[in-house]
Length: 83
Image (tube, rainbow, N blue to C red; front, top):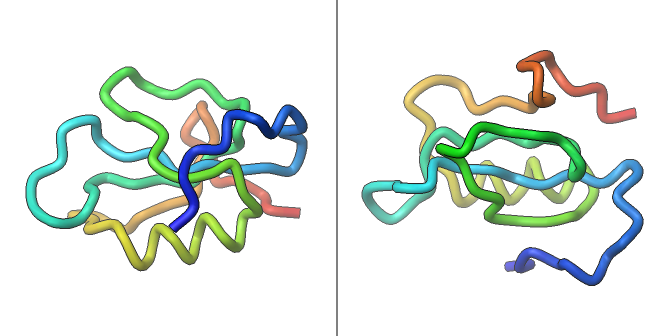
């Protein structure tokens, strides 16, 4: 598992996984993939990345439990274009 890499200064085309700050159970909850430089609500913390979009999606699928569909969204809540 890749930890948060704070030494990576180039965040262009990099993404992170965020999850609820307080998660119950073995898996993270309410996860999303966002751009590494995106703003997000204080109810969430970064839990993986920065990494490629594909790496973040893989990590999310393996480590997150979503009550609704997990998503890739930017700070405005719009779907992220991974290209």
